Length: 256
Image 1 (cartoon, rainbow, N blue to C red):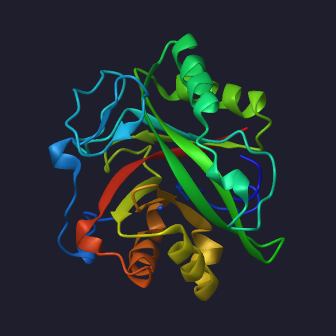
Image 2 (cartoon, one colour):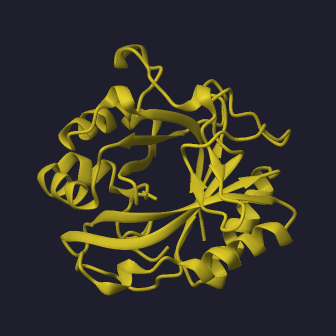
């Protein structure tokens, strides 16, 4: 993605879906509450849009999510190549329908199985510009894919759409030696609220970089495991209820 909401360059750290955007099993974090046990992740058959309130199928043999209720992998991408600094820019209203179809075709053509997809409104901090940047992107579930295959697919997307990088997240057990990041989802967050919180919290701007918000108001944030305590305090600043959040552990990669 191209540096703003770009999950990489301008913001420097994760990006976001979130998507820049928890609950966890850290002993210091207290009790955990997740949606993972219910496996509530599915698609609308005709559009490939994600429906988080429907039951989903089983997991592939390509990877183990450790019972986290997540797809084998996810790709966060956009076809935007501009730096957008106006939250009211009409380019942020796109639904990326054609882009969504094309990415699903790329996934399928390279031996993986495309799953659900959802739109994300990203808000990221640009240290270079000294202000927040914005981007409309999509998250894609990817099944029947391994680490190398996911890297290859993300690279193809980055090159085709002239992105500085594409964020890939592979869901793996918390205790896996490959685990280096978490995907946090928590309801009750707006893109405007995320922007205001970033402006008010210098540490979150520096370490988390930003995040993304789904159209139904869920923060999506991918961050290093070490930044979980910061992510938890940041969600509190957003006014979100940590007990309603979900944390998935995995391996993240920015692919160019």
